[in-house]
Every structure is written in C-alpha cells, then in structure tokens.
Image (cartoon, rainbow, N blue to C red):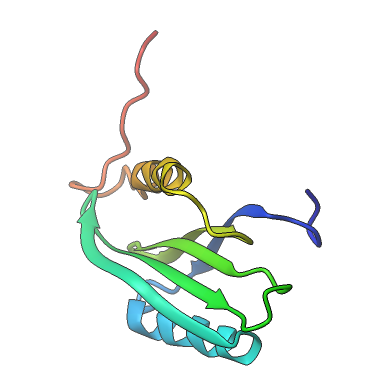
Length: 130
C-alpha cells in the first residue's frame, strides 16, 4: 500500500496546546469535510468515557457513495483530550470491514491511551518485566 493507494490505514494526529478541543466540534468539522466528498456520511456509533483519567470519545464515521465504483471510507476513531493536547487515533478502511477486522482494530484502540507521570491519576503504566 502507498499513501495514494491504500485499503487500510492507521493515522495519529496531535493537536498541541488544544486540550480544550471538544469532541462535538471535531466531529462536526470532520463530518463537514466528508460531506464535501461523500454522497452520504454518518456517525454510526459514538461512546464517551474516560481512560486513565482523561476524557475519551470513540466513534465510527462512514462515507459512502451511490456509484459502487467509488469505495467507501469507514473510520474507527478514538479521540483523547489530554491535559495539554488532544490526540486522535484513526483507522480507515476503503472497504466494509468484517466483524473480525472491526474487533481487531477496536481491541487495538482500546489499548491506546495518554499518560502523564507528572500528574497523579494519569501515571504511565510500568513496563512489564519478561
């Protein structure tokens, strides 16, 4: 796969000094961008929560086309609002993933977290000894 020709892609974005970035604002911005390209875009699942003391939001966003020759874009997205920055980890598919593929990447996103050893309640996990 290349940057221009891919079927499955993992990306990470860090918005420095953006700890006040709200989930709804990011959702809206992404949806507006996708509406410019897709025939139909939707957020099909969304969940708010907390991980390691930081607010998180996880959602599935879809981009579909009436013309079947245009492949869909389906994204599993996790956004973490840290103390000083906001982090987005996103897995995109240019196909409709089967349940095992969704589980594989959902399990991966579950493990992605933010930590800060300077703040109680947000400590980084200790590496396990082997």
